[in-house]
Image (cartoon, rainbow, N blue to C red; front, side):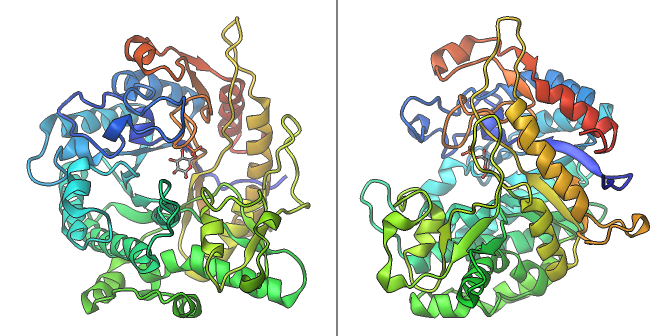
Amino acid sequence: MAKFPKNFLWRASTFTSQVEGAYNLGGKGPTIYDKDDKKLNEGTCSFKYASDFYHHYKEDIALMAEMGFKVFRISISWARILPEGEGTINPEGIAFYKNVFKECRKYGIEPLVTIYHFDLPLALEEKYGSWANRGMIEAYVNYCKILFENFKDDVKYWLTNNEYNVLIYYEAVDMMTGQVADLTQLYNTGHVQLVAMAKAMALCHEISPNSKIGPAPNLASFYPASSDPKDTIAAMNMNALRNFMWVDPLVFGSYPKEINEYFRLNNIVLDILNDDLTAFRNAKPDFIGFNCYGNETVSYLDYYKIDWSELVGGDNRKNSYLQKLTEKPGVGKAVANDYLPRNPIDDNPYDPYCIRVTSRVLTDRYHLPLIVTENGYGRPDILEEDRTIHDQYRIEHLKATIEQMALGIEQMALGIEEGAMLFGYCPWSAIDLVSTREGITKRYGFVYVDRDEDDEKAKISPMTRYRKDSFYWYQKVIESNGENL
Ligand code: BG6
């Protein structure tokens, strides 16, 4: 089978609010995740105690070292550094992350640090409303300055905002009223984030010239549903709208032309200032980090004749950001893909080609090194009486993805020439964490965290860690540099 380069970075990811817990300890300010004990679904836990990484970080990092990690992706909570989002720095917050990074270094693990992963300080939401407000740019850049100055000796790899591209679509429809949001405002929420991120990238290069910084969007290529040329055009449109428009400004200094028609048809106007374009030109990301859970298949959509029930997953406009895109003229419709394999354990379709294909597309377009910052499979896991966890479905999923990834990677010397400039892979996630939509019952980790959806129990639980079958499997994958799958 194909081989990975010698220095390939094997690792995994987590995100503060989903693992850290200690929501009101160590001087941390409230985030939007603490608002009304934010729960997205009835019966799920909140993010208050999560997996209590705050108190378990030494044990968790030791487990990652045991698995052989070379890099650990973690995010910093803005409200732990700046409880009000701006103004006074919380020294306990700085000290906490310094200790986490020190612990990583003890084992030779390189931290890859996300600056902002969904958990906006509540004070900023109250002051600015949303990312559509340009006041957020200065607040974000000031926060980044504090991080770069304080952690320049601890952090070599920075990621800016997690999934800023798909996240905006989750706000496209008001869950309470069913009203479709104003699309101009929605897309400007993304534009303001891009400007803020571009400024942060230039600042990082100035303050910490030895560090490298890149974005972390969720990118997934589109397969045309058939050889009908109209399906190919639909796939091209979707690629431009869902992927390229969120990376081009940072790399090329401007938005791709292909989005103009969609914006014209839907009366969307981006508020682009000259200063924004200067910021884009100066961003110069060193690499592109991207989350990739599966590509999409798309067919031409005659917008004026949509039968919503025909869409993959039925009429799911309330929850699917893709369908929210589809609600407007100028894009394609997502359909099922019968060529994809099904996981033998639970019969769910999955896409092992997603990273192989998407990283080739990105390499062709951007010629920048790539890191997969998330990929994985979340399902409920069972803790057996003998404290083992048999998550074979996760192993099958990761194995198939890694096999395909190996085929796509750049290794001219070995005669494998697909040429994707992929230098690292971070499955989601290192340890179990609270899913953004489905509580702790849906698990992603190589390490099982013993807690359930009950917050009151979690508050006093020791949250014991147990190694899953996938833990031992991934350990061998890393040890053999991807040969032993
Ligand atoms: C990614 C997010 O979109 O998907 C993670 O960056 C998230 O934060 C992951 O956990 C899986 O989604 P979910 O909803 O199952 O947690």
